[in-house]
Structures are given as structure tokens and as C-alpha cells.
Image (cartoon, rainbow, N blue to C red; front, side):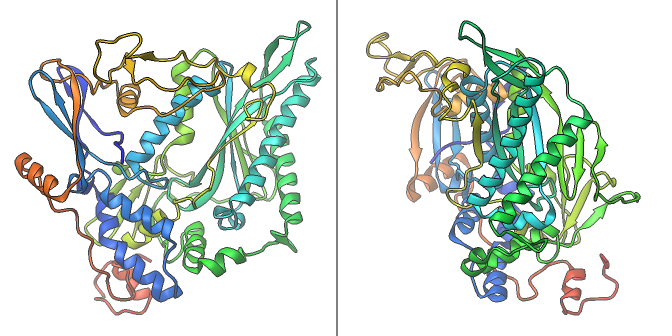
Length: 522
């Protein structure tokens, strides 16, 4: 159990904590109204249920933050003001709250303990459509592709700086695997934060950072062509590409046929993960068979694309943390999902597509299929370190920020303190000198993300303390009745009959007659 990042309100000109109500959001309604239908469709259409890790994620999201499933009580020591905080599901896929907490915590760790205070550059590599479903559930293959790409970029940095008179330089990178695009179609792509230059030893043996002076469109094109050639060679050696076509993932297709089919549909946006009504302006399309520069510091070739225009300067703590949060962001936000009145759900894009599309209108079941593919398999690493930032690098301890000072022990340094406060923590075993990060409490994340001091009462300014964890059914019902809150958890809607979709145009396409006057989406 745990608590999660929550929305805010303003009290006396300062941000204050406000309990989130997930059951009131459109995203929560879409999941609970279509979850059993998705299960029924998978078992009938593919003679196989969805894998357990996907089901656990979807069902956990239904309970995340819902008071009827248990909560913590925080109370003021002076005025007895109370707040209740629902438990989180700790989902790794699409849960907006748990994803927000993980984003804030990991970004803080990267800035405080991993990334040296040097210029950073984000490089985003996107793979061709044909490869996306193939690598989405093969962690070993995606890891090999990631290493090949990162090694190509690190080698390019070494060559560039050697040509500028800095031999023997080494750079480093942190790579985050994002599984989906902004329209939630399955598209594993790499967000890599590179040290924008190299470390090299001076005559005295000290490490000195040498920044890359500039980057051009030709440089980005060179990096893309080298990385693309090496990745394709890797895939051919592994038998993923044969006769210029991508082989199917036989292991996934045999063990999880339902998931394999949903992944293939999610990549292309076809049934059952689509189709979508696109709100767009007409624009002339163009191919990408050659190396093209669609905009500054962005190159595409043969389905691969590389974007390298985003940077963060040394000394810009806020900008560096914002960049880390961007690469770690959850795949969706609650405000991007809107229920429409004609059995459709609108997915608002973070930014319009190049053809002017700013939103997609989907059947609710199609949206749920896309959400299911955001969930990474167990043991699937989504953050990887390379170069001087890798754990095995001999230079890592010399380039990362120094370890934090040990927190004050309440028994040794402040014996009168009997509570867990911001300045005192329970006495723990001494950490090794190489220790850098650890668990960040909820109160620290709230302060870091929203400038909310959860330990300070909004009414009297007194100290807020954890008073209870309410987990039993009787305790939950009694406490929520006293608060005037409903004690019944959200109920899942029963499964719909085939063809399962709600929108009449899709049901017509699949063979079920509907009234002719209803809106024909296609």
C-alpha cells in the first residue's frame, strides 16, 4: 500500500492538498464500464484470457485512490483537522497518479544523485511501425536495440570531441523507454538524456567535462544513419528481420495470443484498438524513404526518426528536473479523456499532429485495448544507464553528484523528538559511501512537485500526523459513514454481448444492424 500524488487547491494564497476522486473521472468510468467486456472479447475472440499482469494492472486501477478500498488518516495535533488519503495501486502502466508519483521520485533521484551538473541533450529515437509490436514485449530484444542506439551516439560524441582535440573522452546517458504515443498507440520509443559532451582526464588525472560546442542537422542525420544501420544489422543477426520483413514473435503469439493480437492492433490503430475519428485539417502527405529533415535537429529515414533539439543547461536545476520529468511522464492524464454523448470517448492529444489532428474519438472498448498495451511485462526494465553513468563504469563515482549527508538520528541527535518529522528520521543502518538514492516519502514528493507541506495544517498551522491506516471492511464503512462518503466501491459493468463495441458504426461494420439515421463514422 502507498499514497500517490494528488491534485491541489489554494488556501490563503498557498497550494494545499486536496484528495483526488478517481471514480469521478472519465478515464475511470471507461475502464470500469468496459473491463469485463474486454475480458469476454479476449476469451471468445482469441480463446485465451489476457495475461495476469495486464489484468492486475487494470483491476488495480479501479481501486487506486478509492476510499472504499482503504485509506490513511492524517490529523492535526492542535485543532484535530483531518485528511483522508486513499491507497495507491503502484501501477506501472497508465495509472495517472502512480505514474505521477514515480515520475516525480525518479526525476528527483536523477537530478540529485545521478546526472552531473553538465549540459544535457535529449535524443528521441522512434522505430518503424513494423518493429513496434515485435519489440514491445521482448525485453531482451528491446534492451539490445537500446544498447546499440546509445553506443552509436556515445561513439559519435567520442569521435566529435577527438576531432576537437579531446582524446579519450567518455560520455554517458540515461534512457527511458516510453511504450505508447500520445494517441496511446503501441510504439516503444527511446527518450535518452545524454551528457552533451565528454569527460576526459587532464594532465593531473582530474576529470574535466568538455561540452559539445554545437549540433547541426547534418550531425543528427549522421547519428541516425549510423544507429539505423547498426540496429538493422542487429535485428538480422537475431533473425528478427528475414528477407526484408519482420518475423512474428512466436513465443508471445503462442503463450499470449490475445495480448499479441491486441498489440498488433494497437500499433496500427485498427480493430479492436480503433478505428478512430480524427479531428484534423487536410495536408499533403510525403514519404520518408530518404533521409529527411522535417524540422530543426530532427531527421527521418526508412521509418526511423531521431529528434535532438531539446536541451538543458548546466546550473539550471529547474530545467534539468523538468526535462527528466518529461522523459518519465505517464502515458495519459485524466483531463485528456472526455466522454461524448454518442457512445464515443475523446482522447485529446498533448499537441496536434503534423496533419492538424488535435483529438481522436474512439469507441470506449478501443481505448481500453490501447490502455492494456501500455502495461510493461514483469521484469521489463524501462530505465537504462550507459557510459560513465552505468553501474560498472570506473568513472561513475567520479562524475555523479556526491552522496547526501546522513539524516539526523532521533535517538542520538534529538532524543526529545518522538515523531517522524522532516528533520529527524528513524535510526537506520549506515549507508555505504556509494549509496545515492532511496525511497522518497510522500510528503517530500508533494513538496517537490506542488510546494505542499502535508505536515502543516491548513487551518491552524499545527503539525499533521499519521493517525491510522483503515483497512478492515467494518472500519472503512464506519469511518466513511461519519465522513458522509459512500462506502461501496465502484462496480464493474457487466460484459456486453458480441460484437462488444458500443458505437453503432463499428457494430454495423461487424455485422450487427443499427438504425440508419445514426451517425456513420466512416
